[in-house]
Amino acid sequence: MNTTTAVANETQTHEQITPSGGWLNWLKVAGLVYLLLVAVALIGSGFKTASGDQAKELFAFASDPLTALIVGTVATALIQSSSTVTSIIVGLVAGGLPVTVAIPMIMGANIGTTITNTIVSLGHVNRGEEFRRAFAAATVHDFFNLICVVMFLPLEIMFGFLEKVSGFMASMLVGADSMSMHGFDFIKPLVKPPITLLETAFSSFASTQMTGILMVVAGIVAIFLVITLIGKLLKVLLVGKAREILHSAVGRGPVSGIASGTLMTVLVQSSSTTTSLIVPLAGSGVFTLRQIYPFTLGANIGTCITALLAATAVSGEHTVLALQIALVHLSYNVIGVAVIYSIPFLRNIPLKAAQGLADLTMKNKLYAGAYILGVFFVIPLLLIGGKQLLA
Amino acid sequence: MQNSKSKRELEERIHSLEESLTELKRKLADLEAEEQHEAIDHLNEFLHEVDHELDSLRTFWPEAMRELRRMLGRKA
Image (cartoon, rainbow over all chains, first blue to last red; front, side, top):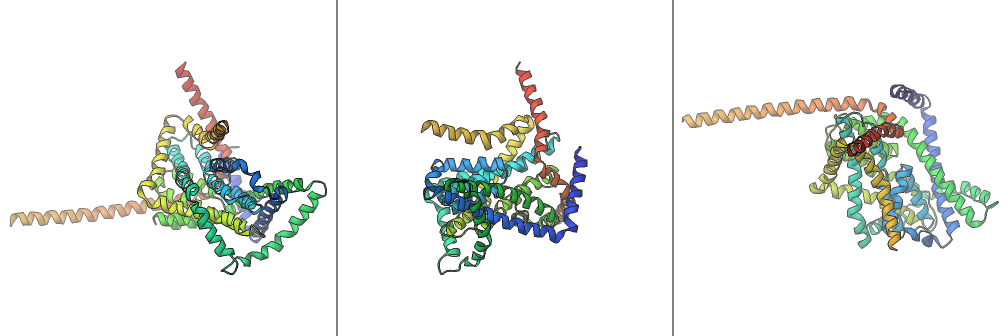
């Protein structure tokens, strides 16, 4: 099937979804959001059941920040969805995974998610200058996220500033008598019945520990499926809205670009979709790299909504911690954009690096493949291997 | 007197050129914005690319292999 036919079929499918069953599709989205909450709570309960009080020991292998960062990067690059990975992390924190281990994982998820738009840009490989522009537009996001980690991970290790900031915000929101999130307690009775049902079903043939493991696995699979389906539905339902948002951002400067990128990602619940959609726009040369750059940064902020949503599913002793890790994701991305984009020297590094790499790939296309394999898989695994050898 | 006249003339010409430049820049920005709006109108078509990133890898693979053969051939 050639591309034109495929696009025509795709458009037909999209049209089938959009106008007719509008309310039905929104009902499906609501159902999927409910399943997402159930899945996150399932991971939390399962992890608690499986590990007992040993959650910290279970993740001892990732207790050093570099390993945790790599776990987050590789897992997200493989799944190609930071929303999935961050929701799983929220569930694991709810089950006892220490926040200090989860923070570098969240940072890694930010790096891993950039693989999708880079792969999308490879589709332009036969189109000369268009490939150079598309590849640069994709990798500017990668370089921004890499710089964020280089700057903020050491600061986090030394001072734990994200942990402190998010901890303060979480305690303000969930805290005892303060402005609280007790309003979200209505979610607990909603998600509890299916979890109890699954726990009873699994425990009828498995040991306590195995029941917990099965719950975690079921939760992970469910999150993956649910986020994929939500993404597909929202993409089709909201493509018109996304167009409106993009139209309104034209010619309005970087702040508007960041806001539009954020809003669009909140709507489609996927930073990969947002950043991948602008790759062809940049490739065509209609938008410059400098114009699409703020838009990709907005996608980083917008994607945090999923983890925040996931955190509302958590109840019990780790409610604050689950919310805290979701707020780590948000504050990390907001601070990253605010700091790096507001300092001209730092702001230009991703632009220059992306342009430099795109120039190299024009000389030899293998650089593109080597870059993807190297950054997302080979270098991370070599670092872990090297660390193991040294240990 | 002569100097002050030619100076005024020069200032007027600069002012007029600056006005023309501003007008041209505005026209260019309008043209670019129009192109951008047109491209955004085709956003639906890009959804296919986003949904089928494996197709991008399939397009890239033969190109990468060709490049690799060319490199190896050059070395041999």
